[in-house]
Image 1 (cartoon, rainbow, N blue to C red):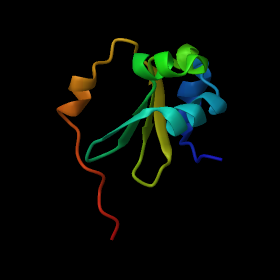
Image 2: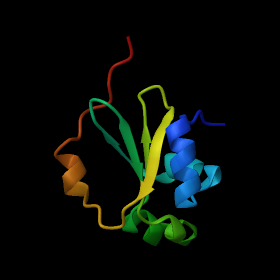
Image 3: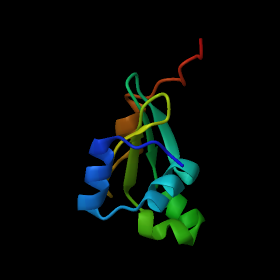
Image 4: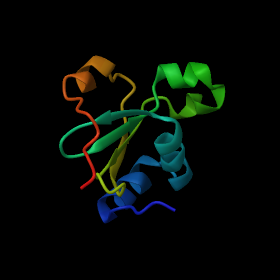
Length: 94
């Protein structure tokens, strides 16, 4: 089970996103790293590769570096290059 912030729980409820949807995105989504968060996304590529993911196309899950869900939202117009500008290598564990 994932740890979700109160903010994430509120956003999931108002956006009709289930905990199972969030877990699926975290498991199968593309990963982008920023200094402040880990971004998991189901995009068109993932949906084309696995048709069961098609209904999740555009779903983003923002995680803290300790894998707590910060927020989640849908944006089908995302472009990988927008994330690539901010992409960083995974932080080293101390």
